[in-house]
Structure formats: structure tokens, C-alpha cells
Amino acid sequence: MKFSPLIEELIESLKVLPGVGPKSAQRIAFQLLERQQKGARRLSKAIDSALLGVQHCQQCRNFAEHDVCDICNSEMRQASGQLCIVASPMDVLAIEETAHYKGRYFVLMGLLSPIDGIGPDELGLNLLEKRMISDDINELILATSPSVEGEATAYYISEMAAQFDLTITRLAQGLPSGGELAAIDGKTLGHAFSGRKSMS
Amino acid sequence: MKFSPLIEELIESLKVLPGVGPKSAQRIAFQLLERQQKGARRLSKAIDSALLGVQHCQQCRNFAEHDVCDICNSEMRQASGQLCIVASPMDVLAIEETAHYKGRYFVLMGLLSPIDGIGPDELGLNLLEKRMISDDINELILATSPSVEGEATAYYISEMAAQFDLTITRLAQGLPSGGELAAIDGKTLGHAFSGRKSMS
Ligand SMILES: [Zn+2]
Ligand SMILES: [Zn+2]
Image (cartoon, rainbow over all chains, first blue to last red; front, top):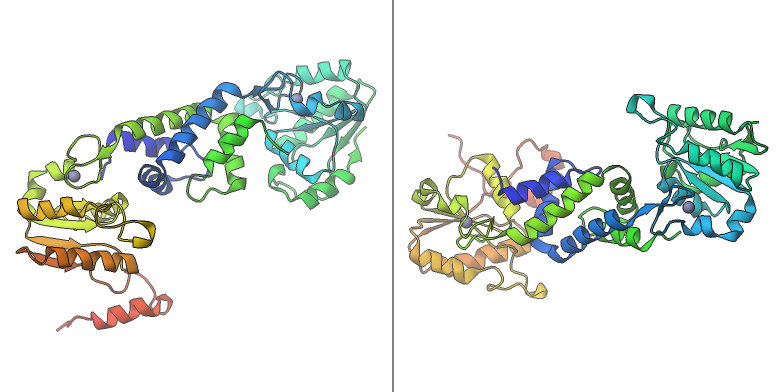
């Protein structure tokens, strides 16, 4: 059975959500129209506002509503001299939740993956290099995941950073191999932080 | 850690979706902003269009984009003389997928539930009564679920329909097809027993 075009389009567009297949897209569409019209309106507004208003921090590339995000602006974090390199904003969140780390971040928004056309430019590594020149950084913490891409990216950045006078470390102890960083529990992540090892 | 207000609002509003808790709302929000901006834009547009354009069929109350839906408009279905009463548009979908039924529907958009303020008016039973008077209906199929509310609603409608010259039927209860007997709850098994049919 085909629904009306507007409902079909709603069902189709709901499939963009991670983990939502054809059946649950149908269920969600009907529920929104039947019982959640107010919530649906709020959702569509929130999507539009976020797409319009959320940009990337000019220093760390994390999501921000201003040119520079709160973490980059914090003097306390600047004073730490630490810069933690992560693949995505969700990794920042996961690390912040451990409360183990009080430095700043650099968010790659991906990992090196030549097959997908993701190279150093896409990860903003020129911006990262500029920060290593101009900022007062004494430790670079490579917190990419222990996957093939994560390791390759960490290696690439460590090579790039070798010319600068700073300590390069990599999260090591406790990370389960192949796991996504953001999915790891806080305790494991905390251990990984305190057990980080020098790469230089 | 708090995100920026726009991201927080996006996360909050995603929780309206069935089965989406705080953690997956976060994940979805970040994925939409990071990798699915086009899909997110399409989704917000589809929600707006559906909320604006989808109305209820004036005859069966199902979702429709015109005054009367395709099913109600079908002469073949009108000629069947059958009217199937269901609780929601998803039930229409489920029945249509069986291809067992070729009549029309009446969609209650709920079930009687005085505690939730859902009475005969909310289910459009006055409209249903009008149809029983004016339409050429010879069988009323009560296809509400075998729950307390579903049974109460079916009983209420059957009482209302008793004054008209039509057959009133209720979907059979029994063993779900393919289910293992030992895994079936006692109530269902009891219904299957009392509804058993002669094979000879
Ligand atoms: Zn920043
Ligand atoms: Zn209709």
C-alpha cells in the first residue's frame, strides 16, 4: 500500500536517521502525525536553527555558535598547554564527561581515509600546524580511535609535529581495539588517559 | 558538558521520536550536523509539509491529502459493503498488506479511554453512525486490538450498530501464525482453544 506523497516523503526522509529502517520510519511518521504534532514542529524548527546557526570553532573546529568556542576561550585550559586531537565532537563530549582532562581540543571531523577522499586538508591539519607554531602547546595528545584510520591519522600527525618542541602522547591503555571512542565507558577512557604513553 | 543552546535544543527535540533516549538523541544530533546536513534539511522540510498538508479523510478519518482518501473513493471497495473499524492508520496499513480485505475502513484514531479523556466524540463515532445510516454497509468488522480498551471500544460500537440491519463481526483470536505453542501466553492459548474449529 502506498501512502499519500507527503507521508511517503516523510517516511523516506526519516530513514536518514541512524538506526531507522523502513518499518520504524513508518511507525515514527505515523506517530508524529497522530500524536506528536507539537513535538514534530519543534523538531523541524530545531533542525533548521541548528543547520543555520551551528558553525565550527575557528580554533578547534568543534561545533560552536560563535567564532571561538567556550573551551578554546577558557584561560584555564589555555594555561594547561595541552591539546587533545580527536576525530569528532562526540569524542570531546566523551572525554569531557570523564573529567580527566582540562586542556583544549582539536577536532578533526573525521579520520584520514584516502579511499573516501579524506586527506590532511579535510581534517584541517594546516590549521593544526599553525596552532602548533603560534600557540603555547607543550603536549599533543593523540586521542583518535585504535582503528586502522585512527592509527594512521595519529601517525601522520605525530610525524607532522615532530619538528616542534612538544611532547606527543597517544591514548593507549584500556582502549578496546577497533572500538569507537565515543561508545567507550568513562572509566575505561579515564584509564586510557592516565596511562597515555609518549610517542616521541 | 553542555553543548551550545542550538545543539541542546536539537538533542531535546529529537527525544520526541519513539525509542530515542538521551544518548541516541545526542548521537543523532551530531551525525545530522556532521554528515547528514542535506538529509536533515530534507527531514525538516518533510515534517513541515506533512504537518501542513496531511489532513483526515472526511469519510474514514484516515490520513489523506484530499477531502476523501483513495480507499474511500474506490468504487470496487464501496461495492463490497464492508466497513472495517480500526484504531489507527498503521492498522489500515497492516491489513492492506495482508491483501485479505477489499472493503473500506473507519479509523478511530484511538480507543475508548475515559481516563485519558478519549470518549465517543474523540473517536468520531457520530460520523461512524451517520455512515451506518447513509452508506450501503452490510458488514461491520470490528478490528480493534484484543486489549481492555480495544474490547470496550468494540463492544460500544457493536451496541451502537445493533439498531441497524448489518452483520457485526470481530477478528478471530487465536494462535499467531508460525508461533511455537510453548512460547504463547496462556490467554491467547485459551482463546485458541475456545475458538477451535472442526476439521472434519
Ligand atoms: Zn574551539
Ligand atoms: Zn477515507
